[in-house]
Length: 159
Image 1 (cartoon, helix red, strand yellow):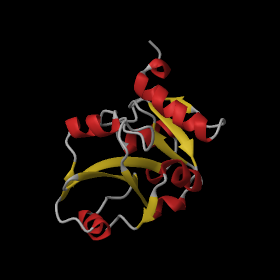
Image 2 (cartoon, one colour; image 1 turned 90 degrees about the vertical axis):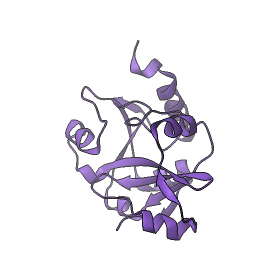
Image 3 (cartoon, helix red, strand yellow; image 1 turned 180 degrees about the vertical axis):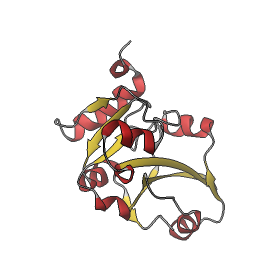
Image 4 (cartoon, helix red, strand yellow; image 1 turned 180 degrees about the horizontal axis):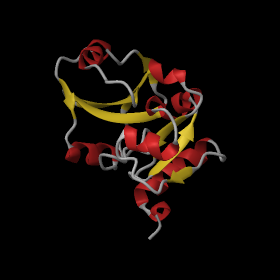
């Protein structure tokens, strides 16, 4: 079975096509499970890889989109959301909320509506690469269109 036939990848592809016909899912030979792996496969800077990190914030979830060379600050998330208890979601929560497994979490095409925060440091790059529903699938997009397609709120998320 081709990776493009997987339900999770099809969900991303549909979201991309609905937004812009020219956007495509790219299949990588090597896994893009980590930002470093993806950057190596795509021959780009690690920072141009968008990490989609799901956090549990008390009774809700937040998806933080952060550059591959940066770390998301829990303190910043707490300030932005006014929630005291924030932690990384566990693998089961990630699957239930997004429909993706860790390593292939896309910033779009989620099963449930999730508030999305985008780190301002992603603006440094002309092209960004984000997971497309599987560790070997990504898509290329620019910062402005990533913000539009995800309806992400641009914030300072890093320390």
